[in-house]
Image (cartoon, rainbow, N blue to C red; front, side, top):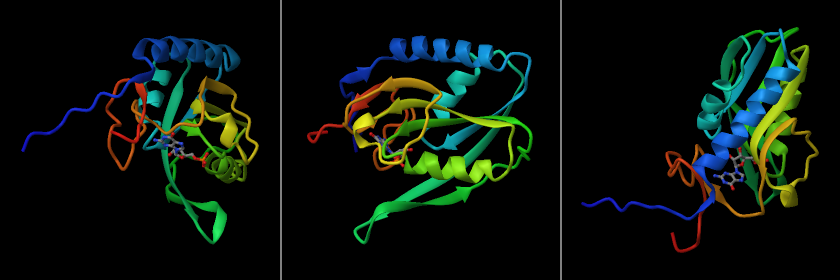
Length: 178
Ligand code: 5GP
């Protein structure tokens, strides 16, 4: 059987992503100058963003991974978030940078921030590649933002649709016809 290749139109190109990540890496390096940083990559969606971002941060980094799933159902409009895989490091007294793919309603990241704050880090900052302001319900501060986007379902550069398209090197919009 022949696999169909899918190349959606780019919303944000590889070059635009690379350029913005360089700027974010520079800001993070400057803000934490002389200090160590624990970077927490939120799986799976942020894995490509996180790997490109840490290469542009000129600080001693310890990398951790965490995995969350969000559930929304008809009886609970706000949905709920489950912790599937936790970090292994003790973050007490540490500078923590959470790296997320996209902030939509803000529920996932708000839950994660709350989980982390209980563990008494020195501080917790958030880097997110994308942000959909029109959907925000839970107010969260994005300290390092890649791009603000309109309310369209995006894929690529780590983001999936039903487990697919993470490998696309750019951000595209999933159209009804795809
Ligand atoms: P929130 O909890 O902020 O509503 O949702 C955040 C999560 O929803 C993201 O980590 C991501 O997994 C998923 N998500 C939200 N919008 C999109 C989108 O446009 N594309 C993809 N692929 N995932 C999205």
